[in-house]
Length: 303
Image (cartoon, rainbow, N blue to C red; front, side, top):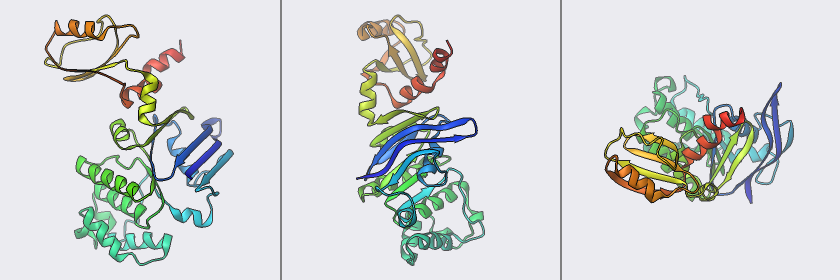
């Protein structure tokens, strides 16, 4: 069964079509990543799945049912705009959120989550005393405390330091192992690559990618070379056969022309600097994202 199904879903705001004729199926028990530029329709789509926005046309089903009544109790949602009752104490707030969905006293579960997220000493502190990162962890706990079957997270890693990112990431993967379905939006392509079973990209309101990372990369072929150079300041732009250079410092990711010889390109670069590593690879999700939504695309569309 699919946890979420969208069929021909369209949403407009005045003259703006935020989402256009979107079809999407999210299988149960998977981690599904939503990516796309700002304003592309990610959050609008998530809000329609949550019934916060109603589509102008099309149909949305959650666990093969329309989102109403008891079905909504099976979903946990963490919005991009974080919002907690600032005057409530952390422990009280989490017990309150847990009780909203299943009516049980989750005091024990609250303590376990607070211990896990290193927040126990803040249990009796008011939300308004927490740092932004701590508040975000509390909001995440509030989203999952009732053990929802479908968990929807809008930018869950935004603003977190690496330690807390790891805590959230590991928790999401553990929830998946328990059989939960997780949908999250992110601007971090590395996170999407490492975590997601499927990746969905929306651009200007329309679906442009929806598949496994491997299948998406296969579509773009083996036209990428990753290099680690001894001299990070060598300019590879202009070398015959190279069509694009992504410079990350000592690591360079280059795109080569269809008929180009990688070994010839390597020999040319070796004449400029020592090469510490050289790998013919499939394009990264970052590169694919830029190919679809980057400046080059805009130039082609306006040509």
